[in-house]
Image (cartoon, rainbow over all chains, first blue to last red; front, side, top):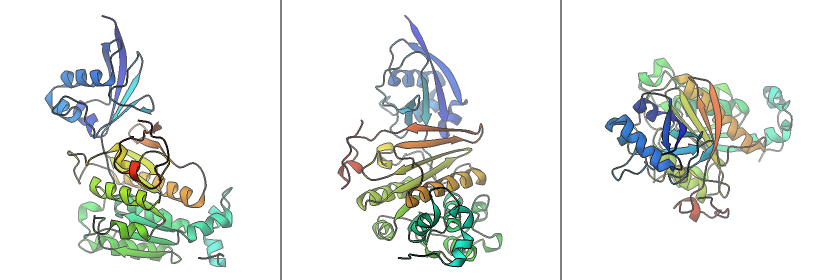
Length: 93
Length: 257
């Protein structure tokens, strides 16, 4: 199986849950964003998975996902070298 | 509506009157403008301070409650000696002392379903600086319904975000957050300097929108990581099925997703 490598950047609360600000992920060539997010959920364990994925194993709608600088839906196909950013919600105060 | 600046105002605002493309016409636009600031804590306090400095004619400050000691790492309009006293009255007192040309209207209420339409009606622009998504989403809805721009400021730890909603042009906050994020808590880690940074950037966005300078962050979010001092802009998508902006009076733009 051919693999592609993408880089994931975490912002705000999800960075703490992931324990790092970024990491590289190898995923099957042609995988979409949803597939990569699910594989990340398995990789980091339950505490991270519940922040990233809901009970139906879908990416949480309260997180914002970007591929490069473009807002992306979980169905977005990925390609080798893509940079994914996950923004957890934040507010004023 | 004011058509002139006084000699005192010309002197007070002299440094910004020199800004290319601003001048007296821009200053008069600010003088005749009214801005609603939702909460005057770390973010909204810095934003309101800068709008008072810039000469925005009327600032409506909405913030309930009394000052706590642990507010003071970021709430610059407050005083250590006034812990336990009204936040919004302290903010108003400080802003009036700083710039007596500005009319400051303190309202000791947080934005709610009951008051949001009235608060937004009295303003030309809305600055959303509250820690609760419920308040931000209410402001977003009311601003869209009343065809008014909204500047939304947010922060967490050493990061911050800024975006602007202009009805009929790009996504709204409900496109980004269809529901209140369940895990969000009112209290969270942050430095006052992060709050001040995003408050000042939000003030600049408001000044641009009111005076017609520059390019506002419509359909764009500024994402700041102050740990690495990296600033980037990401493109936001409007949701076709957004229950808020797809039914607003200005929903003329074709949504992207």
